[in-house]
Length: 506
Image (cartoon, rainbow, N blue to C red):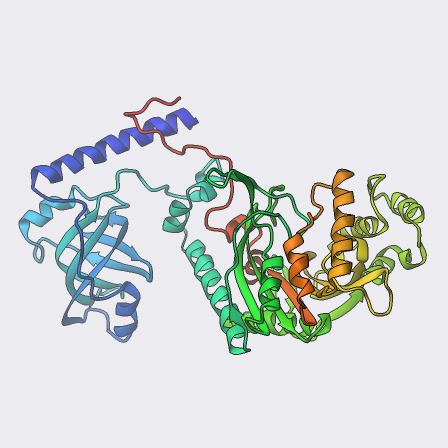
């Protein structure tokens, strides 16, 4: 069926439902009432009457409500779905008033109704509500899709998430798990003495990460502003202020970059800071937090992700960045001290680089191409180049490096953490180096945040900082192949799924 034929079919069905809406109005029935006194969910009834035998009925009276998912025998049997599950309604003429039986023909799959009656188990073992009365709560004017595998446009699931959730119980389960995962993260941190805080999403300087920002404009202040790419610099200001020695924020970040199965321009991050510790303690915290959440939500630390068995049980492996590159390429970049030497080695490996790439940038590109795909089990990649880590403390044993790690699982970056740079003079120098890179064409380079430098000059205690990508973590814990599967409304190019017949398409 062509797209035009599908659209015509939808319009025809909508017109039929509009006629039923008019018929309800003729009967003085409001198809969009204000309230309904629901007294039980489907799952509550299943749990309460799990031992009810076939053919048995109870005298207790219940009110249930939900969406019609199927109708059989002219509406005598209705599958009703609420947020907890499904229950069958039995609407026989011997039990339902005659005027209500007449309304059954005005119901459609997709309508939301409330029903009242007693519980019985059919001779075939189906728990049902023996309906005495029912009420239309929302008339559905558009038909539900029958099967998603019949859709020609698979992205309709993401564009119309509400439909995806209606017809796919596993999708609802994924997003309920998402909520639970975030709850368990929050509980773990607050139970370990962390204070939850909030920082601005609208900022005057795009800082705290190497990323391209979204730019907006404030009319009253007559100034350009940025959507937050990271909360880091504001969180560390709070540490300077002594609000708490342990703080965290579960935040929304925005980066004006590409879209992929593991990238969305709007995403959720956990970012936290702890005073008087370094990146070693952050590694332990990362392991304990993620393994704890997996155990609480899934009941296990062993994941089966897209056919791969991933063991989150601590402790996790640690590899230096240069050591990991040597392991998978046999090239020791720690011995290639100049940019030209590193560039030549990268080109020999078939890794594309730019002529302005620094030594550290070259290492990062080689790592991404040659190492990342091998890192399936959890591993902390530690000791990054200084020139790509402007917010990290210099490595105490090698000033060319910094005390930074990224945690990789399934080849993805799941966490990024530092021994935080607390020296204001060094920090300003790093920012200025970033500005030089920006002038040379690096659109992701940091800007100089003078107020942040001022804050550091008042004194930031030694601290470890950690960022965790919540969406990617949820992908792993829900066995989801695409980040769009765990973000309810992912960023997509708009496309009107249905044009009302009263309106002309532009």
